[in-house]
Length: 116
Image (cartoon, rainbow, N blue to C red; front, side, top):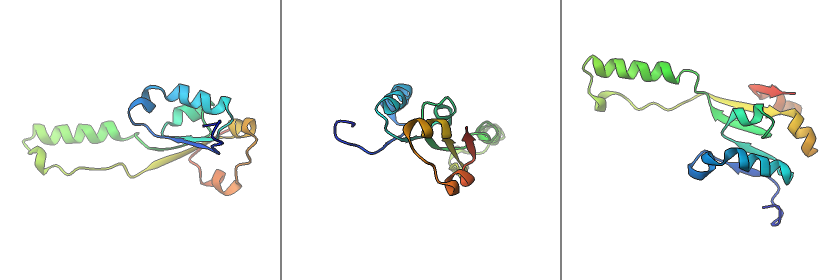
């Protein structure tokens, strides 16, 4: 990507990207490509600039509720499919500084997590 003059990198959590997410993030930093990904932990560790990811904090509780419904006799087809509706925006300002990027204040104030 750096040879093709890419300006930034967005990588998702599908297939090989998940397995190699740390390597992808490390290479993006090495070649000074700002990146956005699906994993807040990469941003927290300084391996990524931005993450926009689903908030999984209540997933265990929601799954437990669905299991309880099934154990009470509900048919699986009668349980509605739910999608995550809350997302987390995380920004690592140290990574931004290392990349020579100024993050706009409006983006910082709208972030759920800012690492300085």
